[in-house]
Image (cartoon, rainbow, N blue to C red; front, side, top):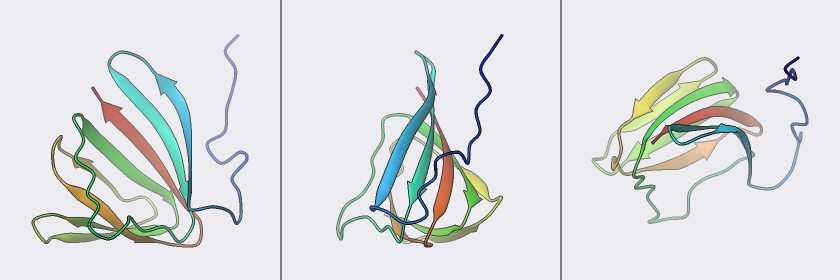
Length: 105
C-alpha cells in the first residue's frame, strides 16, 4: 500500500528564510514544497532556470518580480507557469508562505 503524506505536515511556524522539501522527482519532473518566512531574493539576483516551473501558493502570499519589470502579487490558491529562462525573483513573502512547485524537465 502506498504511503500517505500531507503537504502541511512539519511546517515550521517560524524559522529560517526558506526550507525546500522534495516530494517527488524523476527524469521528467521535480515536485517540491517550499516554505518561505519573510523571504526575498538577494538584490540583483534572478532565477534563470533551464526548466519550466509551475508554482502555486497553498498558504500565505508572495510577490514575484520579472526581469522585464512585471510584478505579480500571489495569494492563496493562485498559480502560474514560469517558462524556462524567464528571469524572476521573489520580492517578498508573508510570515509563512507555502508553495507547491513543479519543475518540468
